[in-house]
Image (cartoon, rainbow, N blue to C red; front, side, top):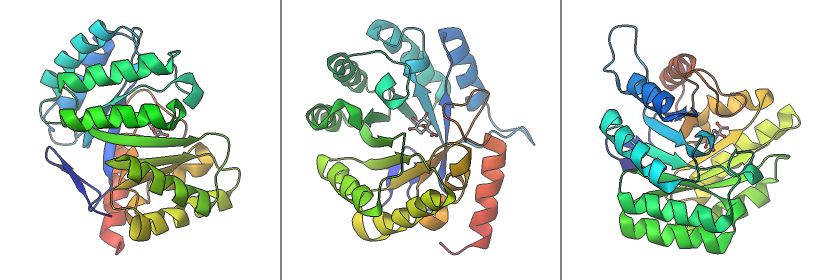
Length: 262
Ligand SMILES: O=C1C[C@@](O)(C(=O)O)C[C@@H](O)[C@@H]1O
């Protein structure tokens, strides 16, 4: 697995990168949260984040491209050099956006064309052709692509996850993300083992794996050992169940980094 440098952040090397999602509904709240993320750390008031994800499906106007662009322009200024991920999750992937695949593709392309975001996160529920369509466009615009495979009701086998990772990499993903739902502790362990195999033997791009819900919490903190390159931390509002808060996450990641040989 090789790393990916986005602005000053090297994803796929060292401590997994902390992504802070912005999950607000209104422009005012979104910008307020972004300002908190951009504050220069003072003493203990450190918000230790590497990347900000805007969860656009949680915004009141997720299907109004003009409004999205206007918020993005402001976010870009506020967040300065912090990389921004643009994500719309449709309700097919437990997100909030009731949006057709065609509109999804259209909004993502328009956003790439603005060059205001560093990465986009696209979901596999839109189908291979639509994913490839967005990826090709994103590459032309210089936007990095995270492709997300959602398994929100089960944990697929190792073989299935490996096949998925290969397929997503072949499509041109810059980062591969696999999300699974555990029904037992063994499911969590299975995903961690799968992560090692993909990171060390299969993928040439960084991968991120998450076992969701309270049962899967371990998968969010031990990525450095198993080969998962990034993890999501909560600020005020969670964007998914099981996410730890940013401060705890940051402390844990540093502690693990000091005590393991990855
Ligand atoms: O894909 C993901 C991962 C996530 O669902 C999580 O479980 O932490 C949180 C989402 O905001 C993000 O887009």
